[in-house]
Image (tube, rainbow, N blue to C red; front, side, top):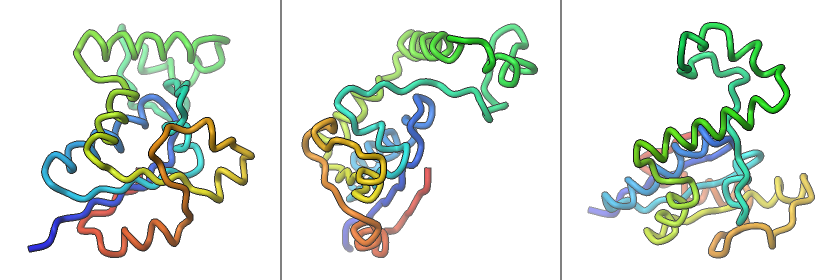
Length: 159
């Protein structure tokens, strides 16, 4: 029986949306899957050497918050200057207190587990991104690169 394959498309570049591709990829790799993550559009933020991602409560009404704030805060709170940075700091602190690895640690774990990470060349060109800003060990490719792998994958996820 051949090795199972997992293909992931990562499109989001926020702290909360950065976790799923790295957690699922590293877990699948640990279970013996061959894994590839295709980072496109805002997901490319997750490949930057200096990852500066934040939590975005905007459009995320399911975000749990203390003291019943989740009922009104995601709408009103986003209008308060600096609130996104404060929420990001709170989320990082909560994750650290619960022993959750950082995105950088999870990305390194994926790298060590030989998860293939592909940066979308079209998006890099579109946003005039400098390839030197990205971590070492990644590849650059287009949709055809992704489909070459995804077309034979057992599981394909869009995150």
